[in-house]
Length: 434
Ligand SMILES: [Zn+2]
Image (tube, rainbow, N blue to C red; front, side):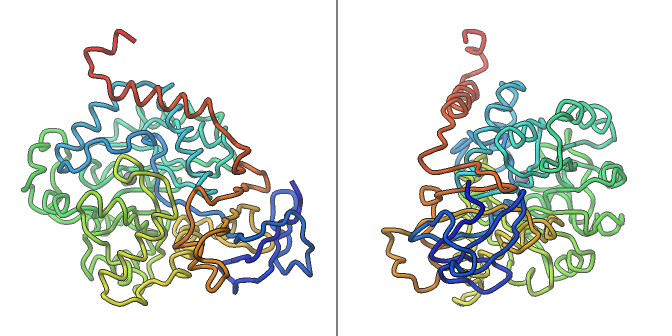
């Protein structure tokens, strides 16, 4: 591909938008950002904006084909269905599904994922399809057994997929499934850490008092902590800048202060929070407190897709509805959230999240041609409100073209994922027939 790309607008995110802008790439890095006059046309995209690749700060690629499963069920019923179906498939299917998830991300202009991975298959998928990733291997439990069993096993299985582009992390799942001892043992590994925190009222109720609808899981969960997860992790010295926490919907002022004080990265997943009936996270309060907040799609197990444009719009709508003011989150701020904000939350800001010389050449080209957003007024608003995966013309990771509209088909990836979904939907009794 050409070493210069140009478009009607370049949105560097950390600098003002550039009309008739261009970006020059060399050996996987951005070497210059400027105007077409300065850098030349290179490959020219008319009616389009060139943006930093989106950084999806919380995903589960291995659930890419779970769309619609258990829609509308309460969490206790939903998790039983999710777990039971997941038990019907093996490694090959996990990998097939994760490939489809990686492809869907690239198609949506996403160039980096922070993926919580149950089996580790996300690492192989990102390696193959060219997506940048931190793959956090999930562990669960009261004791430390899963560090030796699940974590070590999965790490060995994905070893060959790890690289500078696909990195290893660990994810103690959540304070209701992981004891403080296991959190501490994970932190001691010195890897990037991801977890789920303060997602729902039912979770908080269970953790604080052992009551509510989650009581039915008392036999399999660690004992309730007698306090919320954030307070418990703070008390055990387990909140810190190496930790990125998805959700943080049900947080009070004191918990927000704890997240800020300990410099925990937080991932806002507004579609997931809405669809699971968890609420609208206090994004404005988190940002005002100085918390590093990024944006994540979560997975089709709770949201319908890895569509970052839908996520951006949900973030804007949720923030404005909650705060009852139209300036609670501008389109420009939303775009920052999904790029530089996520990069900051993940500790990757030196490498990705904006278009600047020296950073990795991770970017996307979004066409607004034929949309009501042309002629241009505000290019950030056009991308956020008018963008969609169908409008992504090109996605580049490390200077390598990984998706081009009309040129990248992924037929085998789609077929593999469809067959895995079919397996997930079969009742256990019919499995032997296939
Ligand atoms: Zn999650």
